[in-house]
Length: 397
Image 1: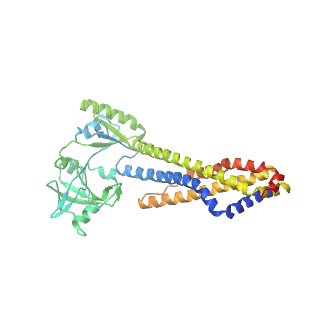
Image 2: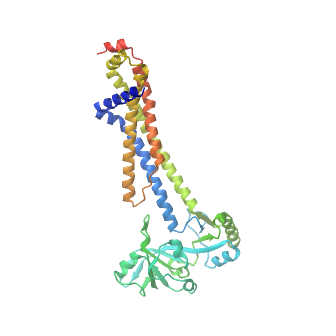
Image 3: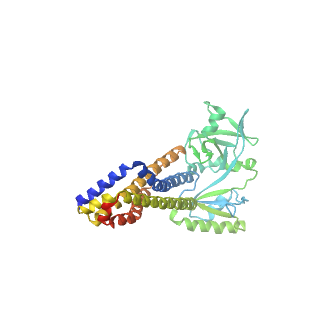
């Protein structure tokens, strides 16, 4: 039985390589379908890891949630939070470990005759440095006393330091934000970019001094850190009730890392579903192509089938021969699709400086599906070949 099976494999292999071009063209539908799915799934896994890391760097970690001004994230916010809300929430909700306030903005910055167009300007409390990550490589970060005293001090990113001061130390120099001088007291470590935002081109100042920059002293968001992460939902509910009572409305909403990731996952799932639909069509077309080529192969080898039957080949031997040949075509197409898909995903992730995360379950599934397509669409040609009358087959020219 094993010898017979091995013989069928060798015959199928010889048949494939006797028509290399035809075999490859037959595989194309399978290659395209598997390539599409593998590429998207692999990029999707890498994108999830990348986005998770970037969300953490923005302060939306698993150990905190964000209180954001505005009822709807899609509508322009009308912030009503103030700096004193930090002490207000801490005094009434003892389960809160820490609160970081944050006001993102942008605007031109100048130093002497040099001007920097639209860097990221962040107003924050002194504890924002732990949330954002990245050490201060020169000087220091501002402290809470400087926040309370509304001192106009700034900690700049390495790109700002390089563009304004070159190789010279920026410490003790003054840069101008919206007409106001800020004393540079520190330079942060290089962090790279978050999408289109160059994090190294940022300037962090005390949140109590940003009114002249953004036109208001109202605060856009708070990152709230519960003492016990397992009670985050409970703390969030208490914050909601407290702020509704204070503001007399619910003109705010909450964000969590998981919530942001759920949105990303939903988008990626929709894209995966869309591409999977295209892949299914490609696999169907590829499967029909395999069936057509196998029927052509049966017609080309009718006399061979007759000879094999005449010398003792059984019906199952003929069925097995053509099923293996069909499965080989589909399986090799699937393997090529996997190789091309992983290569394409690697090149894309390398280009965008992302992390390549290989979804091995997708690779395994693609292998199984490609083999199954070959078997499914090879059944009819195989049965047709096995049903040939050996006498009629031997007379075929």
